[in-house]
Length: 201
Image (cartoon, rainbow, N blue to C red; front, side, top):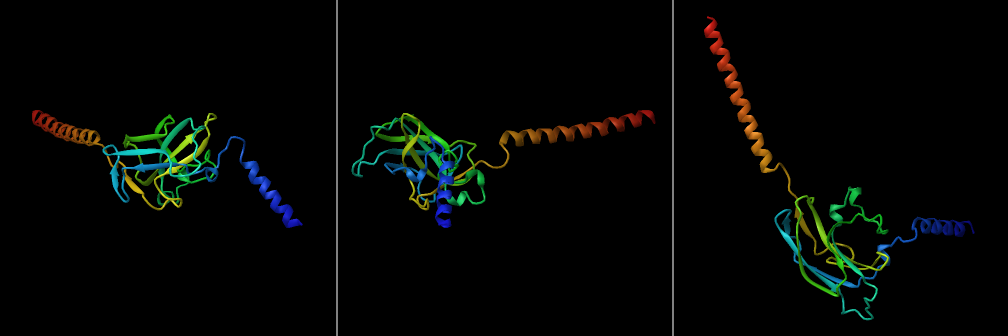
């Protein structure tokens, strides 16, 4: 009896954590297909390369309806390998708390089939392994279905984006100019000092 009461209490506790309006990823049907140009294992460069994405209603599934679909978003998402020991990228079944997909690359009214939109990889994107996921939303702006380029375990069709690391060229140029100026100033100082010494002597 005590164990039954404990189980009920735990269930009620977890239900209380899911407030009205929260959507659980596990409750969403995978009703969309998503195809990206980035290939398995490919390494793309931030600020240089781009990704072309095609997505829409997966009409190969039976009993598909999209009457409640009002808006679509496509997001760039971290693969599990790039979430290890990074709480700020952690997956949560509650989509309001989920940090898997932090980069929105498409946000427009829903269309049944969107062919080949191109997204230029932004310069400030961090180095990581990614996949692409799409959500559709209802009138209440709640996620009601999804699709993604990888499998349920998020272990295939993954690609890497190499972020921009190190200093920018402009910073390097400024650094060189400053060093040259400092060196010339030093020589100038010694030249003036030497000349003043000769004058005094």
